[in-house]
Image 1 (cartoon, rainbow, N blue to C red):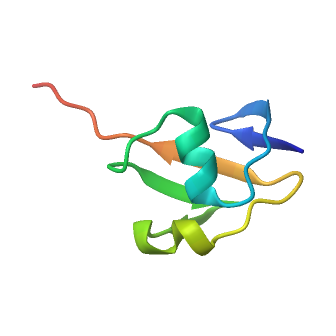
Image 2 (cartoon, rainbow, N blue to C red; image 1 turned 60 degrees about the horizontal axis):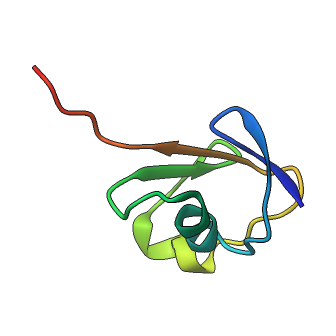
Length: 64
């Protein structure tokens, strides 16, 4: 299926948000949203991914 990940189209076989994060190489310390709604870390494994979903993943930045 095709979804949008951080603004770019992506073909994926993932069925949950947790699967998608693993497939895309993201670690656990990120913030996630599906179709504009925040998804807490504890719900990612039960959050389904469907055709056309818009997923945003934000990783913390370090610096000063």
